[in-house]
Length: 409
Image 1 (cartoon, helix red, strand yellow):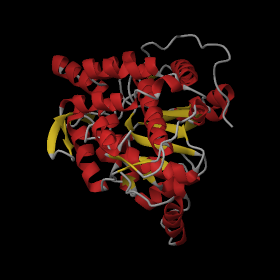
Image 2 (cartoon, one colour):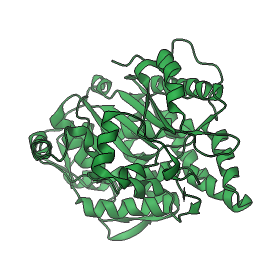
Image 3 (spheres, one colour):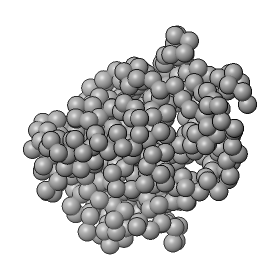
């Protein structure tokens, strides 16, 4: 491959690729084993009669810990509960794990006469009616951020992809920042807030952006420059550790992973799996190009934030900016190009079926699109919640697959 061929291989909307004057290397398939997966989902606890959020997590946690151990935990708001897989070797294992976690959690919640809902915001419950979970860390967050923290009634999806070397993780993060708005557009599930049609597909993103150290990160020259940044924040009292850096993608402060945090929680479990597979494929693809001595044009975060805003506002129905061509391009077209970009790594990852579900999302729309359609048809936010309850458990069996959950280290 010559440099001109590399530039022509991919749309200019993706990071422009060029060759360094070094011989291209073949990437061994064994290298793909490092890209393990971990998936965390934040669920709403909902009363199926009133359709309101219920601050009921404390009553669920005791039995939840007995069944799931550290795979279930409270969040700052008591009407929220989080589950997370163990370290999954591939997307098939992650699929089994996340489906079983939804099934177990739903069973626990239904014992209390409640339901779980997967959506980035609740259509009409108010943050002022929610209780804060009694925990020293959460109390410190509220003390530091006041009403911004108390009003953080949002629900997200976090995907961890294993990257063994910290230096490589930084360079992969630098490149994948550009693709984050594309994936956000696939996940949108928060068009409503406090009983208001916001006009946005991901209002959760706007609520969460009020917190400090959020959004698209800037690029770093090296892991050492990133570590200097973290040390400066710690030494000047901004944070106590790297966990209070809430970027849309970050090197995890304690685990050898890149953590993707940009997405609303998708309502359907199949959408969660597809998006997790796409994040894994993006990491694997960029790593493959770096192994072949290719590198990327790195765009400033301000430009990437322009495309993020378009994903927040329009979801799949808008356009993003092709910075190479200096023009707008339909988001669906750009996601098709993104899928072409990762196509040569998904068989090595064993995720072709899961990645293929992205085409289903592109055709039928996201959870936000379906919520809006129900609301337009009925004018009833309670009908929206009813539909969310149904979609959250779509393709989730009532019975757990025996021995399927992966262990948390």
